[in-house]
Image (cartoon, rainbow, N blue to C red; front, side, top):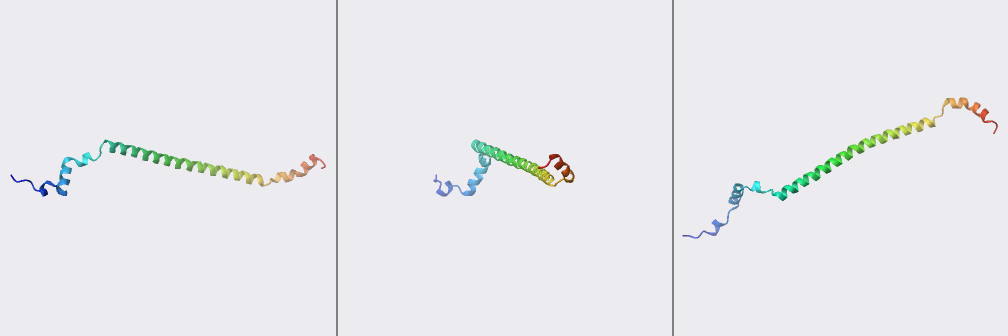
Length: 101
């Protein structure tokens, strides 16, 4: 018998790829640790995405409410600062009721 040569015992890259595809490289790639890691990674990214989305939406609604309250406050301040004409009409009567200073 003839001994196998060194070139026949070392598989070529093409033979290695074929053997791995036949042996189920694609099925064995993700082990249990990798699956658990991917599951945890997807859960964490999902929770972060939902939290940031809710934070954005709720802060947007709070900002709109703040602007509405601020506008109402400014309108009230403008209304208070504008003198009423009835006050000026009743001013002599108020001075008479208050008496001499």
